[in-house]
Image 1 (spheres, helix red, strand yellow):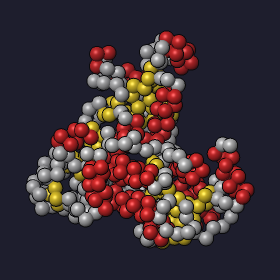
Image 2 (cartoon, rainbow, N blue to C red):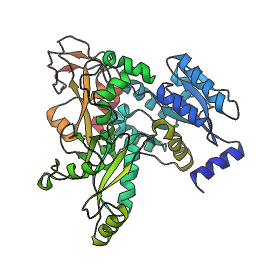
Image 3 (cartoon, rainbow, N blue to C red):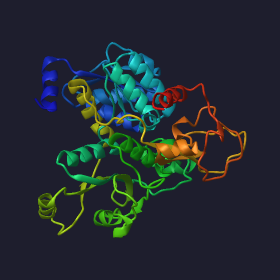
Image 4 (cartoon, helix red, strand yellow):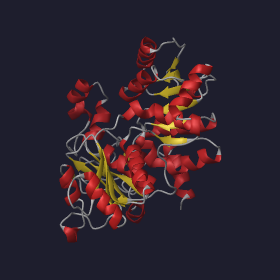
Length: 415
């Protein structure tokens, strides 16, 4: 039976999948609205620190649903996680420390977890995947987010025996490395989104984190620190993302990358594994005689696709995207302004740091700092110049945070 068939069966039996959502911002609200019309699935609980946002999402759900639900709303996410009404949790917060607490609490509650929180997944995903596996639970990133969509295309190509040379995404916003909530505020208001979230998109952190997550899921690495970030259309993407000896920018294949010019799509550059496949690709792709071809999906529907992951987790005990094991890449903190000794340093989407991807091995060799650990009561130990890759020697981290403690456990586990 197909997944849709299983959902219809659940609807017929009056046994819908009961979803709890943590975070009722742009992503959470959109997902709740989507679930309202999906057979065999309901929203049973919504939590947000702004209770008005949670209530608004609940009202929007019932405005579209064929059957009215008594949705639990609360400012305390633990109430939703531990509610008997709820069987699976979606983290739609995008905040590392909150995500760490949600991940741990959901594990304690013995429920599956779907993440719309790339920021926490790149910070402690490997250890949480290991813990959830041990408990017989599903821990997964979300369909619709570029990393999962790209992973699925990667596996599609690999399942046909093809060689995948490059996997990546288009960047949705022009890169503004010094973007902060103040500079992003007007555009954020127009788009009805958090200015911190938009700043993280603009300064490149989100793109780095997404390709970090993809790297950890498929085993590919960035070709260079921060990736190349070429500007290109589809045809140019193939020629530019080639080896240097063949006129491209790459030192190696088997890499993750982003491209300015093909958003909001995702892509894989592939090579046919033998002459017969190469001839068929040339014939079927209608691009003439080429050694490489690009597989491209021109959209990703973000939180609107998350219900697919929810259904997969509950019905099939399967995931959309997970780490292979130990971290392969990291998104490390880079100063985006001059910082003075003694200053408190805020985290992702703030005024102090942005994230840049590098390999896990490079992070260890350079003693660089995962950007997901920065925030809370983090304080600069010394003056830090704009553009500096931060190390553990530069900052006194807030060691009382859940994310710090879980990251320490991860580092010990995968040492």
